[in-house]
Length: 196
Image 1 (cartoon, rainbow, N blue to C red):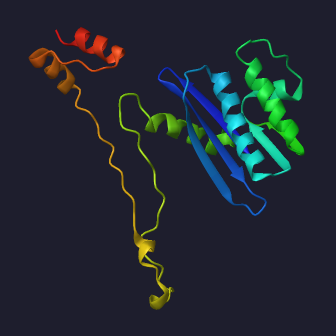
Image 2: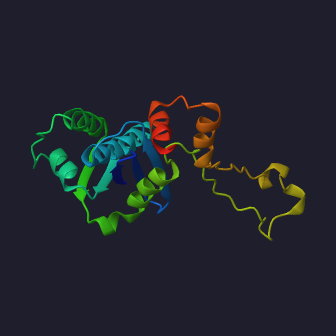
Image 3: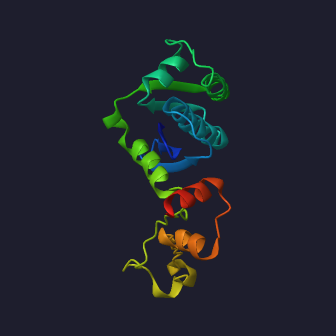
């Protein structure tokens, strides 16, 4: 399992990649519901991955992360000094205790690209004040070697969701013309500031 967390001003996200013994890659991308700093985001990514492994009832796991702080704190090489990290560290240790054989290893960022990309993708696709974008993975053209008689008619259905982008001028025009302001207090303040 590879994990990575990303914290930015607008929010935080996490990426987890599992590689099975059969070389299957299982990618997961998460947005975190609370703003936090980078080390907490790293712990959250690790914890999300460990929770998935506990649900899978896997008893053997190799964990790779590019955060030397998180890896070394869990290995006991570094002391946990920041109070904000203590609950994350404790919960991660508890999850590791539930699993059988877990090895933790620090890797360079370039060796953790997939998890980093998934974390960055989650933060990019959930921009504030915009519609969340859902990604679907689908191949819509049937393979040529399929029997025509056994084809399932639902096999070729594709789900599409449109990401609506709000025109930045509309809220300002609504405010200046009709005195209408959004419910979100941050957006109200921003519109009042930008309107003149």
